[in-house]
Length: 320
Image (cartoon, rainbow, N blue to C red):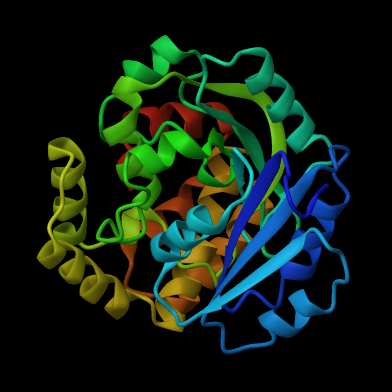
């Protein structure tokens, strides 16, 4: 039954995810809702990702190997091969809570007018230490529809959607490099119904190996192309190539490491007031990038009371 007509396809792109993917796979296989396929698109990994996937002997796991083409291309391949009418997005370094699939499947089948269901998520660092809980910026469909184009309405690895809805929009745009999900939502939400559940259904791992870095570290040109394309709901191949070129210059280990420590420090300070942990990360961020003044500023204010920090952040620090 699972192999031929699963009710859910858990769609997981994976690129050099050997460090975390075993835990991610185990969290899917332990779901209380068992009628699914776990479709993993191995996007040209050069580490032991493929071997780790192959070490699991569960008929619900399907692996497709392809040369490295990026997350959007991997997701489009997955959508093409997905056998279920519902798709649960999931990343290879995250962890599903046991009832994640059951909760979202029960909701969308009980409310068939909805096409996209997201949720809150607990964020952890590279060592699985709890950092904070991210609640969606909007929950009800009406609230989501009213969001400004620059605000992403979903945590991507939390979304559960009707495959037909995404395919009808042409899938993920491969030029919207690193924000293919956000670009999809601005193009699709005006004609579909969506919501976010307030319950955290997974743990999202922030780690220096991830392709995503803190938005604050992006160049001005990268952000200009990104937000102009979101506003216009269109992007050219040339713009996509420029985004990849800019991002490629930033994906050096040193930059990603510095961004990781700075982001962890900020989250431990602003989202989950633990100033000692924040300072540990900020010292590491300063050590990696001693010329970034924002790191010194965050370290300095970590000595102030939480109430003052929150007030200051609302007024100014959200620009950092």
